[in-house]
Amino acid sequence: MTARIDILQGDLTRQAVDAIVNAANRKMLGGGGVDGAIHRAAGPRLLEACRQVPEVEPGVRCPTGEARITPGFDLPARHVIHTVGPVYGGRPRDAELLAAAFRASLALAVDHALRSIAFPAISCGVYGYPLDEAAAVSAEVVHERDWELDEVRFVLFSRDVFAAWKHAHH
Ligand code: APR
Image 1 (cartoon, protein in one colour):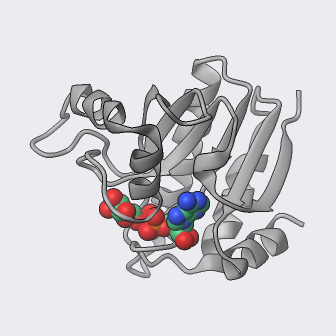
Image 2 (cartoon, rainbow, N blue to C red):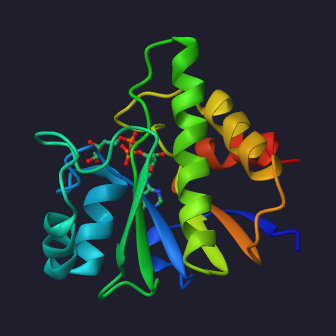
């Protein structure tokens, strides 16, 4: 089953899919950017659910490149898959960690028998990842295997990010 890939400009918090992916930080207790938007739209129960996620080391619930799942609460999406992308530093490891974040999110969705997932441009805001490089990483990962999903959406908030994703996923 080859997943359909949709690239669209819009608001991730409005997507009625099985899971939206949050570009979180390792503490997983909210933040700005899309993390803040998701918590605002999901309501306070999301923060409570995040607090329940065990720390794997002091102050770290989700290491960079890994993913955790919670319910979506007040969001139209049933679940939120929280992942942590790398802070861009121009190192080869950055692309490996960004790929790992996309991959862990897809794998977690498949593990939970979800059929549709929507991503933001992970690491492309506060974490400073160059748009074209991040978009290329996302395309490589989504095509690296036959993910048992019906639909993978990339939901980009701004025109420049949308253009980068359209170009990378042609
Ligand atoms: N829908 C879709 N995309 C959005 C939305 C939204 N509602 N709001 C912001 N974005 C976009 C940003 O424009 C950017 O292109 O999500 C992309 C990711 O940017 P950030 O949210 O800043 O995420 P990231 O760069 O991964 O930095 C993560 O920021 O918010 C904090 O707690 C978070 O510490 C973590 C860090």
